[in-house]
Image (cartoon, helix red, strand yellow):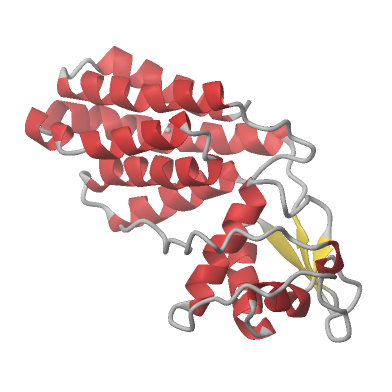
Length: 245
């Protein structure tokens, strides 16, 4: 089921990642054949590139185990290699890629065990916080989060996995923000994002899975509003377990 939503990429910033971007070196690779560079607006270039790369990761365009070079990806986006490298460094911090000296960045190969461990840690953090919030937060505050839950449902309905993951994190952040603990928000959001990077050779997420996942957000809001603590605990744990699949 997730301090502000990360920068949104322009709709055009979802290009396919060319084969040539998977590089052995970082200076002399040719651009993708026949692919006209997409121009990224100069303001917030790094943020737009970062968002486009995140979309490419969750959509499976960046393949686990493959190495991608910044200059070729920069040509594809119509920018220099510098903002691509900066964005990739951020992705390395987030655990999505690792630096390969003199070559570029390798997409991390994730395992089901890693995903299960992340789900366990998230449950240890978020369930006690949500139970405490359920006892203390008035119903009107929960009602104000309904548009965020509806946004996840809208993204799920059209099968937009990348946008769903953004709205999912936004929902969780809004819930946890009611605890008033900025350190909690940063840690929980980092764990949440790490749990969203795809597994090695993972099957494509079905729209029905996203729709079912999104429905749990609304059910959670109803349980929080009703101060139904057993249901809150069950829903959050089930939500994290389902995210492992």
